[in-house]
Image 1: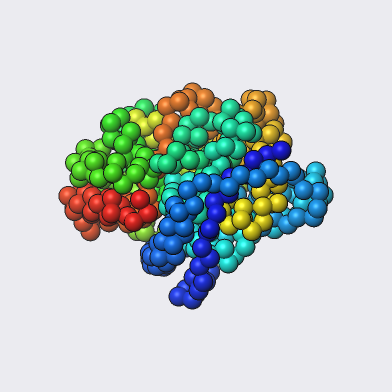
Image 2 (image 1 turned 90 degrees about the vertical axis):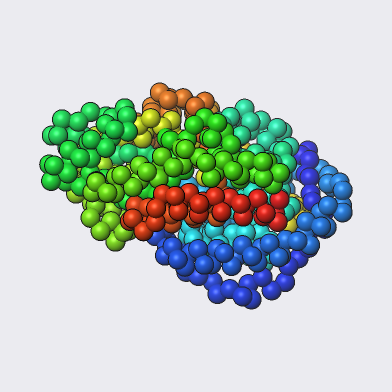
Length: 480
């Protein structure tokens, strides 16, 4: 028998989608202006929609407890997965699970990054989309948890022994200010990683750099040899800013600013001035400005989208390329070059950063409206940590959240480049990894401001002031 903790009195919100037209942002390269505009509108809508929900949840005072067993009756589970690797993983995992449990049918719907950010919270608040569980960024989903919109999985982490089966850093990263665990992590992504052509390094006499100055010197030498040093500038900030910042922040700054989204509003108020005076953040902006001013990136880099910049690197239009570990399985889409000729290293002077973006959560309305589905979903979660399922994560070049896989099981199915990444993780050690829990407004601001600094549109002082003001707004966030 398994215990189910159900939050009662979740208020149904009517008309959530009246003010929105469903956007067709199904691809990763969605227009940033459109994304930000829709996200801001969605944020306001969810805040208004959740107010009564929080009040009702507080009035209840206690959580209901009910014992249930896995049903043998036909049951259909609806899931939203992020387009790309996650969709591939969950379609395969759902098919495998249904073979083992013929009464269970999964409907896996693929959603683009922009759509998921904007409409995931709306769907969770309203229940109109009938999504039983979904993929979402644990560091961006804390507001949903704070408003009582997500099922607390802490008891199930303990009951199923997930804490012993998963990376301890990942468990900490999914924790919430109220002590709950609203997310289940099956894998994680490392950022920032620098990919390079081994033969081009050899041609310019370069070794894997151990300092930021050596890193920049390789880019300079590449320019001298007639190649752009680093491709993918715009995406460098969009995807990897938090990892880049970790190379510059002090341990004190990382231990506070790095877990910003997991703080209570009182804790944010006590530490908000650190954003204004962060030497690490200032040094990070300076590093971006220096690289751009020295011409170490691709000319007119803002015209490059993700695929174009990756194609440029794959065809040796640049010596290095900055992207996360999910790129390992994609190089064959852009080049016929043997993967043995491509290497990877972490940004010098930065610890390998564990970014626990690969997380799952269950809306509380699922427990209210379809309690028979909860044991099935939890059992499915549990299966993701077992060998055959965890190998599906490895096949998509993500680092598995499961610690039960042996080196032999990993190498059996892993892309050769992902084996290199796993070895890099072993060398650095996950105990030194850090999850950056920035809030969504901060992440959007980093992307925008990082690019403006690179383009010389704003000064570093202006960038610092802008980020500080976003953090001040976070302190006043009504969700806390």
